[in-house]
Amino acid sequence: MNARLSLILLFLSVIPLSASPLIQNPGGRDVTSLNGTWKIIVDPYETGYFDYRHQESAWGYGQDAKPKNKQELLEYDFDRSPSLQVPGDWNSQREDLKYYEGTLWYRKAFEATPKAGKRYFLRFDAANYEAKVWLNGAKLGDHRGGFTPFEFEVSGILKTGRNSVVVKVDNRRHEEAVPTVNTDWWNYGGLTRDVTLIETEATFIRDYAVTLGKDAGTVEAWALLDGPAASGMPVSLKVDGWRAEGRADQTGLVRLLMNADPARWTPEDPRLIDVTLAAGGTSGIHDRIGFRKIETKGVDILLNGKPVFLRGICLHEEPISEKGGRIQNAVQDRELLALAKDLGCNFVRLAHYPHNEAMLREADRLGLMVWAEVPVYWTIQWENAATFENAKSQLEAMIQRDKNRASVVIWSVGNETPRGDARLKFMNGLVDAARSLDTTRLISAALEQSGDLERRVDDPLGHKLDVLGLNEYVGWYDGAPDKCRRVSYSSALEKPLIISEFGGDAKQGLHGPKEERWNEEYQAWIYEEQLPMLDKISNLRGMTPWILKDFRSPRRPLPGIQDGWNRKGLVSNLGKKKKAFAVLKKYYEAKAKTTPSR
Ligand code: GCU
Image (cartoon, rainbow, N blue to C red):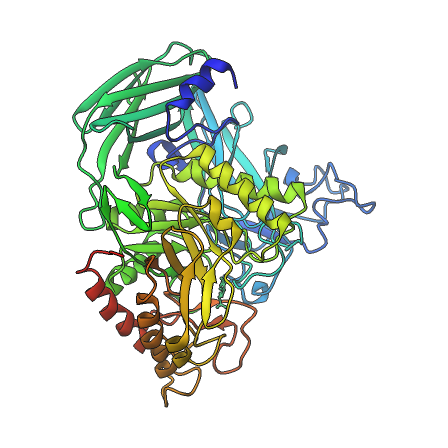
């Protein structure tokens, strides 16, 4: 990065990614959806990719070929193959794919009429876990990481008439991956989020950030142009009625500063302001952005300068449904977040990976602050440089995609990672990466503790964090619920603490004496004992009990109770409330009337 650009960046609170960032706010562009029915081939031996010598084959399924004559041998044919819906994981779409971990090929044939002077990008909002992509037989590239978007420029490859996009998705788990082989959630594989074709001008605004400025009464923004006419191109910014203009420099970057004082976003009044960025006289890109400030002061978390208590709940990205699976649309996002609002939440922890962009936009709209997280979960390969780069690129992709979402107040770099020197170096590296991209949000992680009855949050990773996170399961994994009366917590650091998980399992509809596990009364008893224990923690400034809704996990086989579901939800997988829902709701109603104080 040249000296002048780095000087400009010093003044910015959200920094452009040095690499070529993904197109910001694709939904605000000219997009064609490629969602719908895709042909598929299940390929556990990767026959469509490797030849019999296990070398990459030039005649693999990515060519989507047809025999040229009756003599030619071809042992696949997408047109005559089964199909699946995209977006959607394969596990919940077909019973015979419920546990499938391996390669599955997708093919979509579609019509296009590319226009001269325009550029085209093929975008995947997520594919779990590794994807390789071909368009019209040309290999575009690959992507690793199951929860972040990726895209390829296809200008000049996209044809007028019929086009064929082929994707090899492989969801096998690997020790060196992020997450690694052991997680407590279902390894849903596939094209799990939207696939779109984006059309842009030859020179267009690729990325942008619009935030409150460092000085009161100002709004700062930057836009990064991409294209042959970027240097010197005029760019205009409209924030509500305020306007600013500038010109892109030779790197395509333009920094805009305006005197503006937009209404603030709060959970109680989640104001979203109309923002339009336009380059070179084009109509521009429209976005809806909330303006707010989040910071810490001692053990307090301040939202727009006022202390706030984060009344939260954890969510996996799994819809209310019979079968589980990955969320496929904004309606399913809304259903989950509406339950969180019903619970009295102003905060959600989107565990344990970046959720879909619509979830963040719904949280913006509903007034829910968000703890966003990368899947640096449990026993990651801390000594593996490639693993660190993988985790860092997933973190950067999450920040790059969601940097304009007011709801996101915390970036979390991981969950329950076991202490150790290599782990500390790895995690500190992620904190540095997050801080270098975004100084407007808080950074946290679910940390380790020590002690039994007198517990201390003394994880060294806490030194670099703004907010301490801690998962604890007194009453479930750790004694009976009344043990809570004998446990106290202190923190080694004078920082806000969020209890990022607590809770226990209950099968919805199972009732009995509260002393018996697995019934609703026992789960409610955990909450009744946990809440008074947590109230005694002087630096407690939030909580996100585990978890809003029962979710699928292969780690939970107990017949008649779990049957492959983690039952710690406050509602069942069908959305039916358990007794503990009312216990927490009552607590949050009271909490909403108080302001946190030491
Ligand atoms: C852990 C972990 C969760 C898991 C939960 C449980 O704390 O963070 O992902 O599901 O405990 O055991 O249910």
